[in-house]
Length: 105
Image (spheres, rainbow, N blue to C red):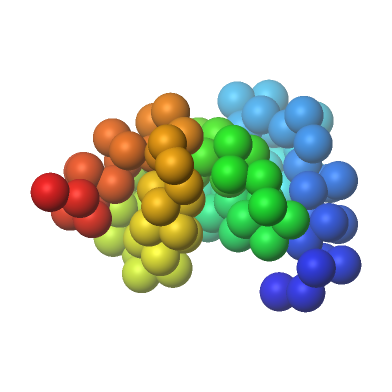
């Protein structure tokens, strides 16, 4: 993902909430929960690329609420969780999520 595509993703999803699918192109009606969660993991990656740990954390926590198995078992999601959890202090919700997936002791 390039910095330009990361910025585009962030602009596109700004203010999006998956519980209001009509307001967000990445979380449209009819998409399975796993696809919405995968989209939110990509949003978290985009936030990471522009240095916004809090934005990445919000997207990860929301993705976990939508489809926990997608976030907790998907290797890419686990990598993003680990990167966000390394922030000091770890953003709210991500430390818990990192513990759930076994990335902390």
